[in-house]
Image (tube, rainbow, N blue to C red; front, side, top):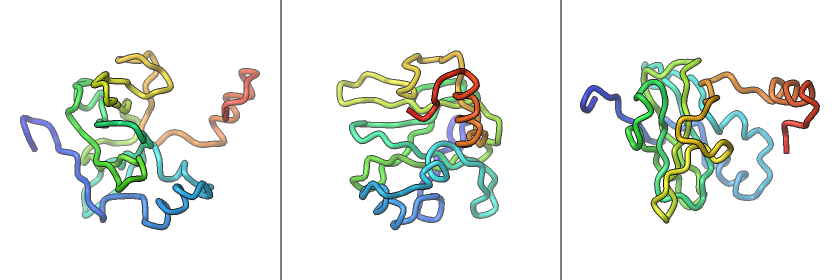
Length: 149
């Protein structure tokens, strides 16, 4: 713990991505990425927390911001996984239902929170561990648009 904040933990045993997952992702044939990317509540080494993972190939730095760190930029940086463009980490104490966003810093040093919304404090941040394909498609079809564009 640093300055009252929990640190982002990254190691081979803290990741949801195996070497085979990275290989299939790079090959373009991984069909269950929704199980790997995003935020997934897990227990690692007896610690309850959330595993975060995002693909940001051109990023210089990626961190997780949210209600748990008062949306502070760079408070919980993620680590790059080899040359795949995948950034990941584990945050102990972050539980299901916690609001979060990924903050991506590009080579131009401009922070971009979750590329889909382009706002620093978006109106609708994501909830840890609540996203499903079925739910996303249902919401998209109900709204008259296909959610999987």
